[in-house]
Length: 405
Image 1 (spheres, rainbow, N blue to C red):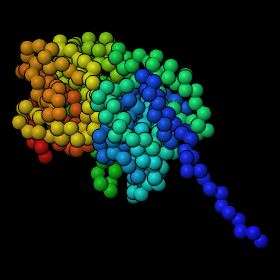
Image 2: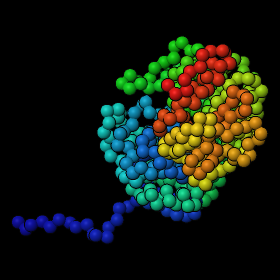
Image 3: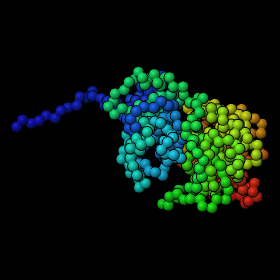
Image 4: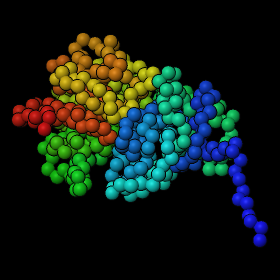
């Protein structure tokens, strides 16, 4: 019998792309598709965190965005039901797309309950792998965060002209109120406390104070940290009026993180915040809540060139003189020069000098731009929750907690 000669693959053969990232300027980046099939139009940003991809992708602040991960190996610890951050996973608030350098491998971690690819499909997140994420990151740093369409077609068939048209036609995040898309549909009480190694989450059974959290896209771990410090947390939708909030007789008011343009959300949120500031109730804001507190106090916000996204950003707390490494996720920032008299800048980014915190002089009101709940990210800023609780305890004549336990 004659010897069979194996078929040879031509040296010039290339793999057919099954995913595309089409930028608004017409640039087309080809890769391998995973996650949900279909397409999504959004803004492209990059995140420099080494861990916490599941928390990042489920952060409601990423609504309307495609996240490019600068760390090359994403997905190798799998996914589980504990590391999500949006309140209602069925609503799938968070990033609409993801870009990875390396292909996703099978998970290897004792907490893994599933493969990232399958989890992305369930979440409806369109993803792409196999590209030079360093080059894409450099492009964003040079030209800013582009509008784009990310598309995944398992058969590799795309209507490229339509994708380019959609990318170029999208108006972007400026002027876009996304908080109304990700906020809670109704009020609810949160009791879950922070995760403990090999024990899981606890429950707050005997709260000592009441905090009303206005949900512009709140993350679970923020609520857990408040609950863990003794708070009964009532979560209310973003559009809730000041009369309804005050009728709940809160000891403190929390303004949550969230996506989109703060000025757009501020159309209905700022008047409510201004009413709440007429009381002596302590107020604490994070991220979008920080930006809207600044607007309510007479400041201004502006779109950033490339934004801050990662778990390794240095911030200085002027109130203590200490530098901390924090999680960041924002594409808009407070203009420090616009802050009126009586509003103090408390925190500043050591990357670019942008504002990261304010406080109202002589009043129990403050906010920060970064994410002190550290999900993902370092826990350097956990003390801010104790600072907020201490404002409540001080008002009630109670002994203060040590800011750093």
